[in-house]
Length: 382
Image (cartoon, rainbow, N blue to C red; front, side, top):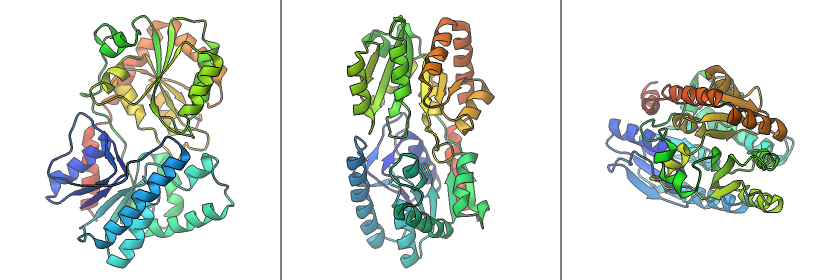
């Protein structure tokens, strides 16, 4: 079995390990394996390729192209795998799989984290009438038709994907993401080394941790920090990297914000401490992305026992999750004033904040790592 994912996050490590538990021959074609609590099964063969670089649009596209070229050549000449599970990272990897499958008679499955070309449209990189957009859509029809099954992360994403498989929607399977609730746990601030190192003991911490991508409305969060600069009990922490980070850091400097801290991605040992250092965890979803992207950080944020602050369209699945499980509040993108009002309310009403935090931790147990075995079961069944 061949697994293809340019950036292997801990959740996909769980999928790989589940596959290895049922098959003696598993190969992972990847550019990077992000460390987590569970190590990759040593029996899994690793083929290393180009690391996913997301500092800018140029580095992102370049790393995608290098990885995709290497993958194409590998898939042409490698020993024929029994089946392939290919992730939509890079976005043209499923296309390459489909092309080579037609030549070599390969069986493949697609796991869609982000749906293209719709993600490019939402980010403003192309128009719905452009040649690129229309051509990509045509290729999707063929790629998805040839796939044995297509995995998505939510019902809303399934609806978006079904446009390309309207004649056989039954092949689209929803498997929700999950979190290791033994790795990401609430930690008292007095016992948290990350809190002590960064002087956060007496602060209500608002945290964004993850990719600062072009589709994420993080400007509203920085504008809220500006509006709330006089409230010295509040502190905003941004952890990660991405195409929008430099813009955000420039905004911080221009506004002279002393209540904002930018940090790089944290290693596996420090990441749980960083998450648990916060009180409010921000998850963003841009307008137009409600059916084509699902933030996996939602589950991590809940596991850390943080109140969720969703910056998302009101009709998104993320907002529905927040409201249904009562794990936080949701604000539409571009509403910095409303966002600052919600943060002020939560900070000044600790009972309400703690209620959301407790509910979030409890909700995280609904999304179990056992979900990884659903991929194995689906690929084993007709």
